[in-house]
Amino acid sequence: MSRVAKALSPASRRTKLPPTPKRHRKTELRRQQIFSGALACFERKGFHETSVTDIAEAAGISSGLIYQYFKDKRDLLFQVILEILEAYNRDVPNALVGVKDPILRFQSASLAYYRVINQRVSAALLSYRESESLDRDQIKILKTKELQTNQLIVDCIEECVRAGYFATPNPELAAYWIITTAHAWGLKNWRLRKITSFDDYARASLRLVTDGMLTELGRAHMKDNDLLRR
Image (cartoon, helix red, strand yellow):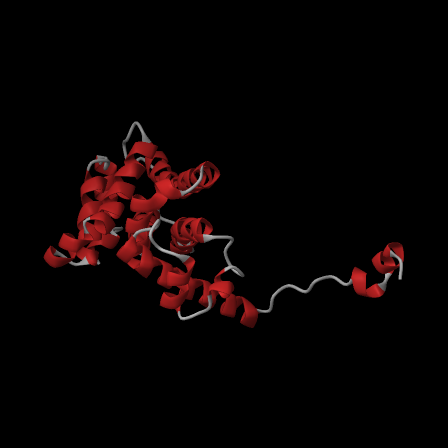
């Protein structure tokens, strides 16, 4: 059969079916299995000293299977770090569903951000320690994603400013106060988890940041709208 005939044949025109939910779940479970193996190896040996074979053994799979999901070891590191940023983009908006009050939206978004770090302490530490091993394009993508996730918090702060509850000349700077205290839980988790619980840390940190922005109207409003007291 000629190339033209092959191109026009019914088989060549079949549309590739999207993955089924079951296959998608299997793929995600496999990726998480590889992530866990990679994190364990990167923590123990460092990125440069870890081989794909090491990761495969830690994940309980073959080396060849890893290449079905990732181009190489650097791509795997990139995807592990990217998954944290994707979690912000998923979990923070989910926390805002059905929440109308500006103060409660700000608190819900911030607490969701804290929880992402708490659920991924090892990955967060890895991102700080090994991100310099990524190439320039990968780092650029991560920075762009970070700005997108930061904007989720900035938007909530700006809503509170428009409502007259917050007074801050720089909402993005205020958002970074939230972000840095969240990341501090990961960076200093070795000690912080011994002196306080995650919930108490998140609420106390968020309270300190919030108190610095509240107007009198905001303080009055928070008497009946405050997740940090619940």
